[in-house]
Length: 460
Image 1 (cartoon, rainbow, N blue to C red):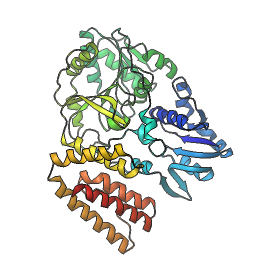
Image 2 (image 1 turned 180 degrees about the horizontal axis):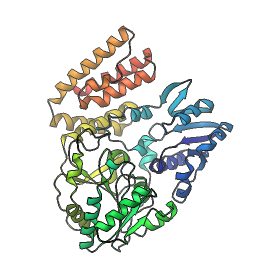
Image 3 (image 1 turned 90 degrees about the vertical axis):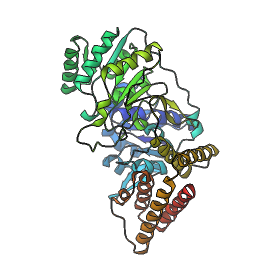
Image 4 (image 1 turned 90 degrees about the horizontal axis):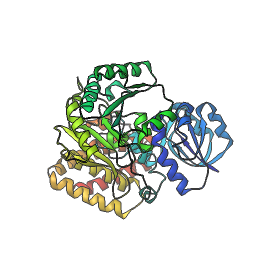
């Protein structure tokens, strides 16, 4: 038998699946097949763990084998439907059988519950890919190399991103390059292959008065990796090349801007830097404001002063309304954003509580989970003692809603989970999705009531 990972999403998603491939290999000697888009995985083979890739256009070939475990990390209809035709012992992720959708696995379901509801999430996608099947000791024992850039002043700036809202303006990039030149660095604009990104790169270079400082999407991925490894630093929004650089051991600074959540998609290996706005709505799923307020905090000369201090090991300047993180690991071996500069807020205490609440509820018993859960509860309710009263009120409301649905054999409104304050929505979204995913079975309602009883114990 073999193991199968279905990862038919974009470039960055494939790279964020590399830890899962590595951990599967360390726990199991079975061959790992990976279903993916050939245009994305083909030129990444020199940094990919050793697995057998199958292109999506040949997915029917997978029917020839029996699988111990299948992990579907994609949300495509065709890959989810494929699963119903395969033979396996264990399955995690989305499955579509006879038009009925079902998500298998506690953590895959948790991930699904984050849709438009990820403000309090503290799990990276790479960890969520694995938590249903990989022992946390395996994750904790992973060894990571520290990225080492060349001390040559060359700084790459990637101007692309999958959405315009996720990348800085051309004016920002141009001014950033001007300020870098003033500090003695040699910035180089890099774009993806699209005509739009090439145009942006040339416009930014023209504004910075370095018209020849452009690499306009002409590199293959293999060539891009080789070039990135000649840099002292790579500056980039949340993009596929950002993930490639961090896994290729290139020092990376992620400009975390717009509807992206660095806890989920920032560089996964340790020792890379992330800067984001300190505004309370940062890390959203989708911007709901008339203008992107998080952009206001990114002022080029201040960002360059910070970069210069990082590269020269000098005292870091305090930048108003900006938080600087470094990618790291916590005591459990899971992804952590380590505060380097910036003010921590109550939101961090709230999100940390939910992180350890779900670790305790959805994973096998672990004394470390228990200890961190107790510490997160104490820190939150000591700082915000009045929060208990609010949560008790909303907990009772949720219990009543579920009991009424059970009594009258009715289903909840699609957006019933949103009828609660944001602080409650990690719980209301997950519990509603759980019973819907299990067709409102008596067993699922019983399980949800157990989770809610455990929550009640936390807030008394």
